[in-house]
Amino acid sequence: MADASQTVDGNTLVAMCLARIGIDKMFGVVGIPVTSLANRAVSNGIRFIAFHNEQSAGYAASAYGYLTGRPGVLLTVSGPGCVHGLAGLSNAAANAWPMVMISGSSEQKFTGRGDFQELDQIAAVKPFSKFSAKATDITEIPSSVFSVVDWAVAGRPGGTYLDLPSDILHQTVDLSEAERLIAHALSSRNKDLIEKPRVNNSEIKKAVEMLRGAERPLIVFGKGAAYAKAENELTKLVESTGIPFLPTPMGKGLLPDTHELAATAARSLAIGKCDVALVVGARLNWLLHFGEPPKWSKDVKFILVDISKEEIELRQPCLGIVGDAKDVVGILHKEIKDDPFCFGKTHPWIEAIKNKSKDNVARMEVQLSKDVVPFNFTTPMRIIRDAILGVGAPAPILVSEGANTMDVGRSVLVQTEARTRLDAGTWGTMGVGLGYCIAAAVAAPDRLVVAVEGDSGFGFSAMEVEVDY
Image: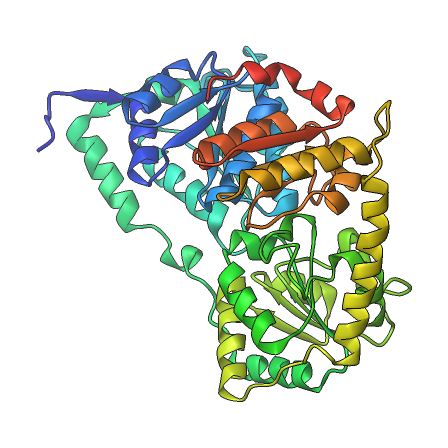
């Protein structure tokens, strides 16, 4: 039973709420007014990973959210600290990764009077935050904390923001009152936010018939499918139907790049000639040429599976299915299993993909076999590739950035397991490398983390090699 004579301040209450909702890692840079908050978080069992710069800490928080499926938390000071943190928050928004940015802010009584590091931080984060909350009194802390965490994972994941004025961090309440506030906020959480959408069965049946009737079908999947942990369901679907697959860069590894139905090495042929494309957890944006000619056939029919109804309405595919990637693909496989079909190895479409892949891989291997001194891009990539493959299981997590380094590495380096590739992503962000490496090491301590970085990309955040994680 809580001791009524004991008091807790706002810092402690924030830490208690974060711990209560399952947050056990926090990335950031401490200083006025959040140093005590970081200390209280540690006291409540939350591991704090201290960075040199909020930008890299934010990138780490966003990647941690992607790798774990739980919001990565970034803690910043007020004003410029919040602004630096926008790099990570915007990266989370662009990549649809769950992240919560928490910033201290100026005392409320000094608003508009030029207080230390004063900034309208709610306005500053607005373009990148799917939900923002500002606790204006200590009693609002529990509901604010739980709301930003829930909104980060609701629907399409993304970044959220919590603003904590310094005066409310120093307010106090009795411990018993703190526990009552937490209990009430927990019981008042919007459960609809964290529930998955129900899949429309008629759309499943239509998708199956479209795939069954296709002459040149293709399954495309991206990091949304990786975030949903849909690798087992995708493997069953691909192998039961014999349909070739094409991953986006961070979708690589959901099925091994070495799989006989992988179309990565025949990408131009696959997207240019397919007549029905099942796109799972990947947006028809610049990475997939917007699903338009001349890269895609003008007659291709898209089946788009996405957690976001708005995304489907934007892209206007032939068929859209709103739902969690893992759930939808599992239901698709079950529907097909009840009335199976399979494109055999001798099907002209399958043979065309395999032959083109084989030819392209052979040409690449000729270049990779050459020891070029001074190094070009292919020689070190071959050495790195072979070293990574030599590690075996669990496969290392590869972090790649830098324009040429990343592009060549995407073709040469082999992914065999899900969520083992992190790169510049949807926004093409440079400078993510060290933050991503630290996030990967924290999220998956049993895996080796390998950074393959261009010199410029590394230079953005090189000092973070000192971070103790």
